[in-house]
Length: 357
Ligand code: SF4
Ligand code: SF4
Image 1 (spheres, protein in one colour):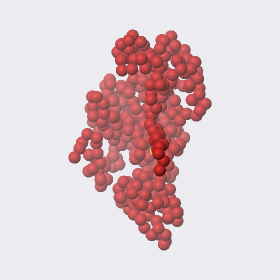
Image 2 (tube, helix red, strand yellow):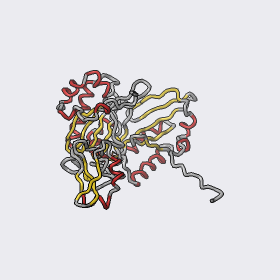
Image 3 (cartoon, protein in one colour):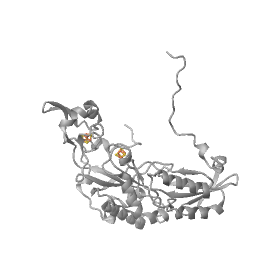
Image 4 (tube, helix red, strand yellow):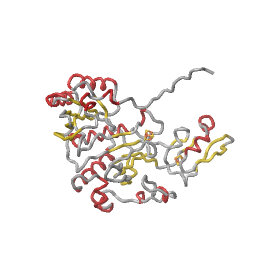
């Protein structure tokens, strides 16, 4: 046995302080107040008297190296050489001198990017990895984002909403998923179709059986070969069996749809978390511009903009007016798909982070 063990490699987040603007580093935890001089710009003032301006820029999130270089060059030339990404893939530049703000905004806009996404706007839509990294997607979540941001670009640039709106998209309904004021998620509408000739060569059957959240998959012998079978009455069409066993094909052009959920919100100092609820199902998964899903999102935003009081988030607004009124003002049909009749609903209805048994 070796005398000296190799030290473990930690691969967590690097120390953020090394990348911070010096004014931020100096005033860390000692900010007096901040204000919002115009959409896309924040001004923070520290107890030390230091000031820093942050300019927020929308990106397409999946960035090629040339775009990244361009964004970094703008940071070097017009900001103070610092750049950071927010969790919704906005880019933020920081400058310690107010005179640099306007030239920076001009350089950003001349390069084709947009400034906005602060305060009561529709900020960058976040999406899950989709076809880039993952093995289950039923659509390209990033494509939905691009088509939707093209339609909502003015809502990003301006502050017209009652409060901030977080929109998310996700390409399956079970994993990294989307939790937001409005979430556009994939919805499979049929159980997987099994190619029995391939299962024994490709799939590790116990892993696939273990993967199913509702125990709908059983080992079976088909045509003398080991395979799997699905109890279709139990299957919730989640798609979790597809990654460990691609012969269990679930995506297809006809049965893979989009669904829209609204009202999801994380807990904060003032409120408990709220869970998003399904408001539109069976929407065509229609690339490259997803016009049907876009039209419904715009309809929900219009009703929210017209009906909500100042500072109400979408979930607050719906709670105040009630779900029947929500369906009326958004002109969305209330169908049998909105009623949770699944046999495990008694548990799922209670699945919240603040209820304990
Ligand atoms: S939402 Fe689902 S399909 Fe999309 S990246 Fe996440 S796990 Fe994969
Ligand atoms: S789609 Fe989901 S519920 Fe249906 S068999 Fe596969 S893992 Fe189970």
